[in-house]
Amino acid sequence: MTGAPQSPFRSFWMGGYEGADHVNGRGDALDMVRATGHDRFLGQDYRAARALGLRCLRESVGWRLSERAPGQWDFSRAVRMARTARRHGLQVLWTLMHYGVPPDLTLLDDGLIPRFARFAAEAARVLKPLSSGPRFYTPINEISFLAWAASSTNAMGPAGAHLDDAGQEDSKVSGYEIKRRLVRAALAGMDAIRDVDPDARFLHIDPVIHVVPTEDTPELRQLASTIASYQWQAFDMLSGRQDPELGGHAAALDWIGLNHYHSSQWEVPSEKRLAWHLGDPRRQPLSELLRLVWERYQRPLIVAETGHIGRGRADWLLDIADQARRAVQLGVPLAGVCLYPLLDRPDWHEPERWHRSGVWHVVRGTHGVPVGRRVVLPYARALATVLPCDEPPHPRPLPLRGRGDDRGGADLSLPLGPRGDRGGADLSLPLGPRG
Image (cartoon, rainbow, N blue to C red; front, side, top):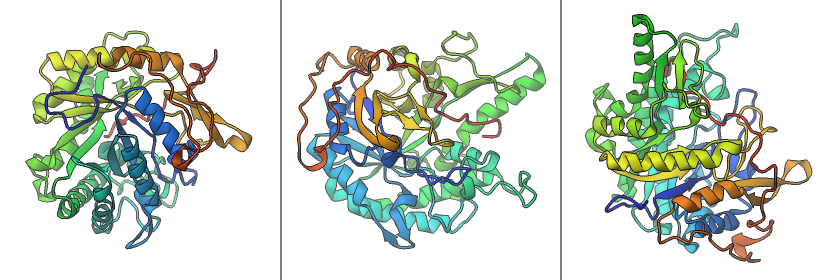
């Protein structure tokens, strides 16, 4: 399948590298790029993605990691990513805030808004000369998910601060108010980026979900409908449909990115997942969910994150490819699907535990330090079957080079072995009952 006509993306099939950088509930300051070794194996990772036909990649700049002090930034990692991507003929879609905020801010602080705008402008100024257009930015990743996680769980640690002095949930911390604040920050960031790069494009990303009642009663049907409606709030605010005092407007909703995993459909109030691998008949086909988003907003879109775990990875990919075809047949202007993450990655809550979710397994040595990658053959072969006909069906592994960003590591063409598709737990948190 090729991209939609006039697609701004270099390939329909894309890949994303995990870039979460928040402080989790137990106080671990996460840096998923470093944890997976992606910063050290950057050239190899990009070359391997290119060899599999992925010419468009999602990367995270990371506000918490980049802002050393108010008005002081270090973009050296993003600059290296941009230069390496250009050398390999790849397009990067940039996420600016991947959950983490500087340590003197929280998601409850209005001071976050101007600070983020200054950061976004500087990031765009640095990246503009390193990438040919169109340059895409996601100001804040998953506004709805982040607002829920910060207000209803301890997943975002001190940035959410959702517990009172007695350790109870603080009713003053509203996920809806966090969502409003993040929308204001995203809009301010967009304005600041456009001042630096008038041709910049914007990709707003959130989960697309489906919720059903545990029992078919009027009360539970209404509950399911209400919870499902939370997924629209951030997009509605950005576009000015809801809470127009925030400054949203139709042009702000440029491109829409939708994240969908097997865990993105559940029943209420039990929150039991609708099992994809068991063919739960209550599941909604992804193509239908995409159609609903298109009909609601009339904006072009991509599947910005999708993937599975363990042995299900290849079958999930083939199913998603079929759903993408169906969506296009339904008239949805779907311009891409991003496999996420491309590399196995640590759990956010327990970083010592890893998820088997990538196209590449991260080979770890002493003390768990990444020392190389091994391709997960069933997943890679499934990808080869869904690539456009003008792509090589079995790309030949490129040789390693001992210079620049291509130094070190193991041969990416090595098979993962008989256990390569086993193990792992759910890699995504649910959107939650309160959005």
